[in-house]
Image: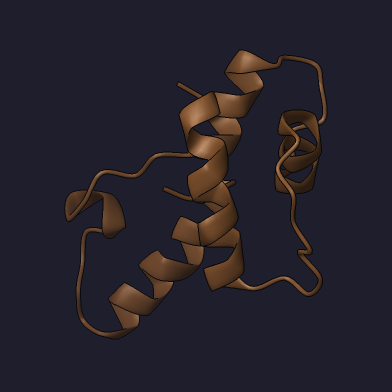
Length: 82
């Protein structure tokens, strides 16, 4: 699960290739893009993670971008995307 997974997976695929693991991340696990899910649920609306947090009334003090904090926030957003 990642918000804008296409962006993140590109970096991960590169790192895997550098480590000698070929075939990309999708070969080894299922990838779910919460941005695509949000765009399907709320078309033509802003769907950045901050937009979703505001729309859903999820309290946060996001501050600087960080993967762990974003993962915790996305875990709160995900149930609303299904």
